[in-house]
Image (cartoon, rainbow, N blue to C red; front, side, top):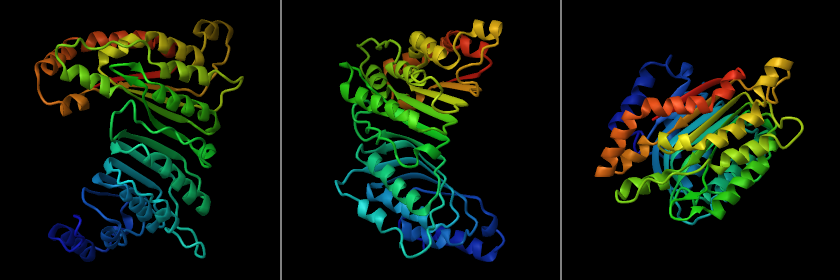
Length: 371
């Protein structure tokens, strides 16, 4: 579908298929749409999917108002429970769209909002959009009396990733009901090291984390794209090497700060937007995290002491560098990086595996992915 609606050939053809095959729409569970889209243009097709429960929207670009229209569209679908948005590009036009969300529903009519899972991954959104988005989700869930169970907000930022990431908006009203939470964090700038703004954002998030009392799954993405991109674009500058990222230490401190675990964590995912070689430098941070999550493994085996987080069954550690490489074009440094990365892939995997051995010995399934 394009921005001129369902009267275009391909969109019209899709509608005709639904008309000619009435048994298709009632059983459809997932529908993807992209890239040019508007709430009013989308309504004629959505109306033909009465049992729609999950919707994936990909590759959209526009002003901040597009987020309001996406929430409005989710409100238009009475049974929609999952909304997944990928590669969203928003240009901040400086307009406040809060009133748009407030006009989504009529308080005199029954609430239609049923959303349980909401995700925005990849793309670029301005820092001001995240607090507004969380506030809008609060408004809708409170009005409808629906418990949001999964929230994954890991887009990029419109400007420098590590210095303009939005601050986490405190503790939303739906925090106690969340079973999964995904967040993008960053506090490193290649020219100056740790930034106070990024560190304050990170501390704000970790301060709020214990209030998410139902969390089973936590995904933290640590953003080093700016530093890595600079290293690739300036061949005469040696690639920077960082000590253990502070967010691992802050996470460990937070998870061990209370006498009892703040939530029944089962699955922890850590994504590093950096080359695999940098992860090898984070050994001390992982040791501190292991102490917080599984404790002294030898004592566990000898004395039968329960782990602090007994439900923790899976740790997924991933590096993500090729997306940054693909955006940089070609130069001598990039070609050399790709060659060295391929040659040292096994070495890096073995080194990271050894760093995480304590988790494995404690019975946690560890998965390491490097791309």
